[in-house]
Image (tube, rainbow, N blue to C red; front, side, top):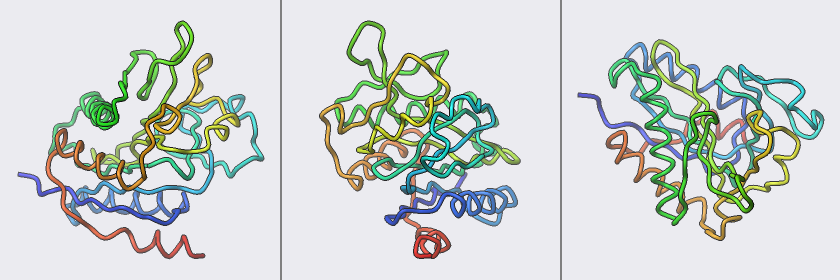
Length: 228
């Protein structure tokens, strides 16, 4: 039986490169049996990331924020203050080597979290992430993104949930390469909540989908990098 998943939460803004470096090392350690599974919640300073399917024409404002190429799936996305990023490092070899089932569980986790704030999150077969119905016929707005990568069946990267970010920052990209739809947040939907409150709810709903968690210290390298 797998041990409880470690759960950590960094309160300071965490540089993206430091986060990716840590995830890669931790994923290798999990695969080798030297570390426990981990979910790491944090916020990044404003930046854009380009997934493995990113189209450069979708980067509308290339000089607005730093742009990082990343090994996760997907296209361009924005990260910044007011958005909770959850990096999910789970051993799917032990949990079941089924990437589609894993992504469905991530979607379920996000939908359950949104439901706690009386927001109905939905998924679409032709669009990645979690969506809410917007104003206007056929319009839907994205409230949560999913982008994962596997190394020896250990997942890393993960999900992001818009709590109260500056939504105008998304205008510098075509989010996930999807035209004709918008981006929203809990605050925009009239469901204001603190980052701490949402982080707590995400943990509660994670446990209903993936199993028990145990407190863990935030990665010290992230705290150090944030001060530099």
